[in-house]
Length: 337
Image 1 (cartoon, helix red, strand yellow):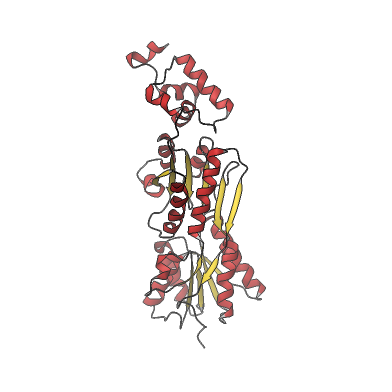
Image 2 (cartoon, rainbow, N blue to C red; image 1 turned 90 degrees about the vertical axis):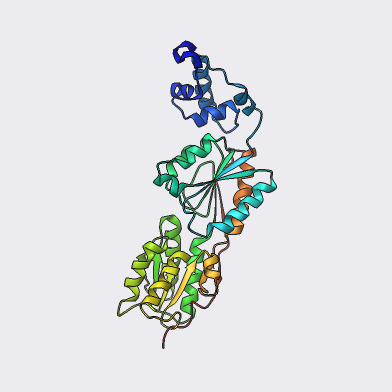
């Protein structure tokens, strides 16, 4: 049978094709990884036998040694919110003797690379998905091969995987209650994508309704380029709101830029509140009131959960919510008289 492959003999790729699985799964079977189902393991082993495949020395060594490397998937390196999360994550992982390899999913997708598949092919022991990803289906497939923890977002939810995130519903309530307590009644929310966006908008809507008011919700996206034209059009209205609660700090900065270009004073004419409490919010020149999403604590817990799953991959799904807090700065104040 080996002769059909020429002098080189059958390869991992040949085994994967015969079994109808990925090369990553074949590698995991060679490493005797515990999180491969018996059915899929048998499928690969049968293909190896049929092809007469014999692993080389390096492949055999994989069966007795973990890589001690965790893949970290980030969708937008331009967004500063992940920095503290990454610091907490690496602190947990490095403390357990695990290294990390980082992949920028947003960039990879634009140039035709598949970040998740590349990470798994490199023999990572586990995967941490930081923030929303455009590779949800690939993450679901990876969760069949290696332990996966999702950090800073709610998607995708996995049967054998964990989610660590701040309480976005409460965070939306905190931001809105702050503006109401200042005396604002015409408040707008620039909403963001995904379930996180829905929860923050839900907190806004719930708090406004409890106050007997109806807030204005506009899709503001998750970055400055998308949020700016929406914010500028909103603030150019004759009946403009006296306060804006933005989905994140980037969309809040876009709102500050729009206000400045329209000659509006912040917070004299319009108050602005962001979310994530990134380094941008803490800059003195910006001084943005923002909801702290506890990204450092999210990262620390995500690392702990992944370490748990390396020892017990079939743990039931867990959701861990980190407390959201509001940091008040000079971008918010009472409405104009």
